[in-house]
Image 1 (cartoon, rainbow, N blue to C red):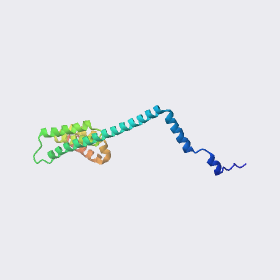
Image 2 (cartoon, one colour):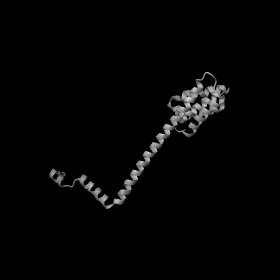
Image 3 (cartoon, rainbow, N blue to C red):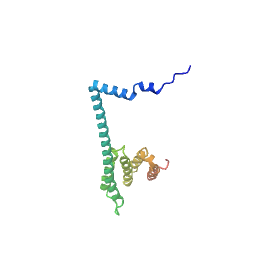
Image 4 (cartoon, helix red, strand yellow):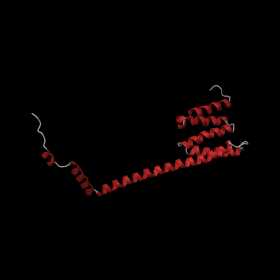
Length: 167
């Protein structure tokens, strides 16, 4: 037996789903104002927390780049100087880069600062310290972002300076 075909007239007599659902929501809000208010406060608090965390992370990122830029400027002055750099000047820049590498290690500026500490230690002829830094940099995201070959080159040059030919 064929199913009875529903006519438009019969469909119009059925209650509208949108109006019915909206009415239920309005009724719930009127009957439970405390729950609705608490829910709105929780959502608002969550949004404020997310905005605050985002702001903090952006400020931390900007601060790390500012510090790295200042330290890199000093590094460039040492490298481009016609006379040899004083050990105190190298130590100051090394301390700046180490501060950035320690406090901002998860950010790109911290990873780059770690890389430059290797350069400065190599300049000071502390080849073991430089090798340690270059190996640490190899496990950061810099190696995955295209600097892997450069890092390997610095590791190889440091091993040559150490006369460690076996590796």
